[in-house]
Length: 257
Ligand SMILES: Nc1ncnc2c1ncn2[C@@H]1O[C@H](COP(=O)(O)OP(=O)(O)OP(=O)(O)O)[C@@H](O)[C@H]1O
Image 1 (cartoon, protein in one colour):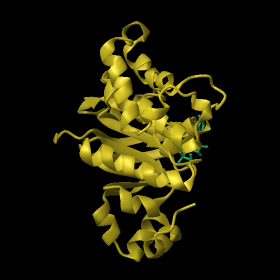
Image 2 (cartoon, rainbow, N blue to C red):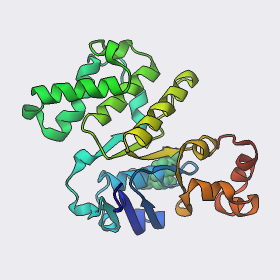
Image 3 (cartoon, rainbow, N blue to C red):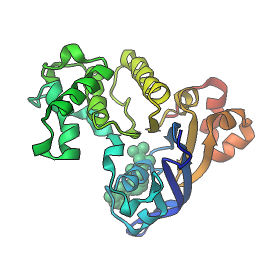
Image 4 (cartoon, rainbow, N blue to C red):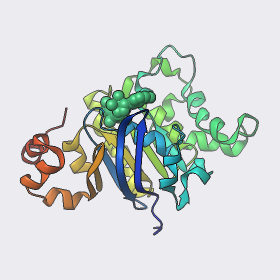
């Protein structure tokens, strides 16, 4: 385990035109953590993820460090995998096999002319195996269920062997039967392979059980730390972080809508 945090953010603020979206965010993700980033609609979760991934170039990015390197200078993007919310609304008529979709995770990282050597073909097959989709490898992705398609997108993110996997509401649109196996897969990646996870979610109830660390965002960071610490907080303190919704969650472990 590495003592350099996988991600650290120091007093980051960001605004779209004249609207303050993120205020004074300081956050650390230790190597090997599974951090949940939760917050209501419009709280700035996707904006924060976009800043981390350089999808939103801004001078504010100098407040972010990835693997100990200032984000504007960071080059090792093969260490970072990303599964967006949109993966689940993928055009199901898209004519590509599982193998082809997963190979795209390498094309974007190493360039088209280098990617189809034997070693990379093997990496593609290993990524498909890791998500338990080997028997579907030459099937058209359009013929798969939502849960199976989502596994393929995870394989696409895994193929470059990332050290940090960022997931933006990955269970939206996935049927309940597949959500459980999805969390089992995340657990394997995190605990067995030591992959650090950052997962955006609305569902604080589920996250308190699955993740090791928590960040509660509502434009500002209301809580940031280990899940055990969060779970020991009493209702009064929780309400200050998150309003009445967390008060309810701490009793029944229901989800936040
Ligand atoms: N490109 C943009 N230009 C201007 N304002 C934006 C832009 N993108 C997002 N916003 C605003 O910034 C705020 C934060 O949005 P963001 O998408 O980061 O929140 P979120 O927590 O991810 O929300 P959700 O859970 O609904 O996806 C919202 O008020 C949103 O309307």
